[in-house]
Length: 265
Image (cartoon, rainbow, N blue to C red):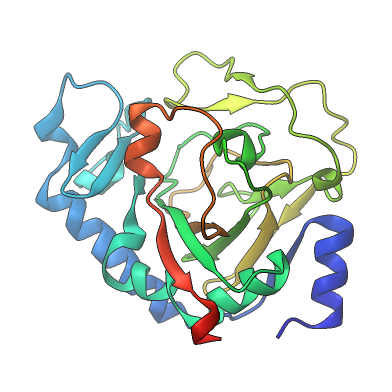
């Protein structure tokens, strides 16, 4: 059950953090599995192939900017999608604790997880501009709920998220291409925002950020020598349908998986 303070923060600001939601060791297991998947099918085997490549059911996104200090295959990767389809990441995604949070916030018993990303944010990696996740989710039922699990510490120096509290009360804003030359594939941005109320979200390993899919958020560059790792999940109401034909890439990374059903509650 959420606390009154958490429910109030969700309604007023569109996000809240649950400290020590899991042990740091739980996140390290997810990281080890992600690294093992990359090493079994490294980016070097896909040179000349733009954008994402597949490794079984996983979709792997290399960094657009080369990492001149890369020593291992995972040092060249930005994100892995579909991690909720197996291993420790799946166990977390389908856990009763995660499902209960989402169910209470959306007011529905039947909940699915439909997307997941392991984010590496290696040293020197660029941040992602202001955006709203629902822009990427063209569904007939809104909103969705994001769960952002800190695997490592998230600090001002290594590229923590920043949010605009209360921005979830507005509509989905127009998103344009990331204007930076060499930005990662799929990065879009909302411009012209008043950023005076922007708030960094500092987190420790095992902390969980719960956020509304309309909430405007971004991340900064990683200016440290260490990786800032996170596991991110997106949940929605079971039975949600796309409002339009999905692009081939969307079909690959929007993988609806049951988490919670009325009979199980």
